[in-house]
Length: 419
Image (cartoon, rainbow, N blue to C red; front, side, top):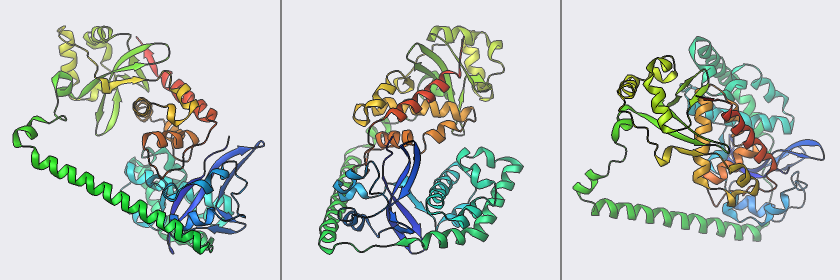
């Protein structure tokens, strides 16, 4: 399958530069990966206008034989502006590792190290591989926060930080030395610069319009109306205890279970990575009335859990599922196979939330890896959930994405423990 060609931004010692990256794709039985460049040069540009001027006129470079290249010269300038998911601040890594290893820090560092590894692979930068292989922590970043917890995790993070402090300049120098800023046609550049300026002007006007509307709303809304709008306040019993009944619709059945968030971490009714599910809301309520049955489940660590059991034992517990907690997995694989325009973004977002929550709860990093922005399914999902006119649309066929999604759903369904 032909993977997409993605605009990226690299924060390097010589400045923030934009270029193009073709993540791994298979062709004629071989796996490939490439960046915009020629032989030993990595082509990069000060902005999307220069990049657009180059791709519209250049005839010789390393991406010209890519299966999707024919679409790139036809892109408008905004479509060549890298999005936030593909902006990599290599210069900022020392500052990043000076922070505590929370999920955000580790996630951003994982993305940066991932693109650095790709550059080292494609451009044969042995010295960069030596730095990244110098300590185990670099290879564990994709697993998230878990490897960096506890005493051993602290040691891993310390070793990684020390490696960055002493050796990251080697990485920066190696990549910086590859960069060449090619000359572009002056007449074409004038046109693309106008396109970029017009885009920024329209964006600024649109943002100013939104701010103005918000100001008007704030001015027109009186105190009583503001007091009436507090959607985040708990409503009803389940809102008060902070635990949600959820409904899961698979291609074969409907299931009901419970989930909550403790310190932003998902917890399901279940244990050892298996979720206890029931065929109806009443069946779930009846099961909860047998409090001894769930004495050891993971939700037992939630302070309000006893309130749920007490109400269930008294026969007063009503299980009602909000629309926002209804997850429909059926049909998404067929929609994914047809491409972005056929996918219900709301359905997909909820399905991704459920599958990701379950994997996080079970300490399974395979979902995060599959949905990473450098993977074909992750790129397609990101494109649907975070629409941006400046992004290059994923290209068909989507067989690989459909297959990857089906594996995620199958893995999730294997976690369901029917009662």
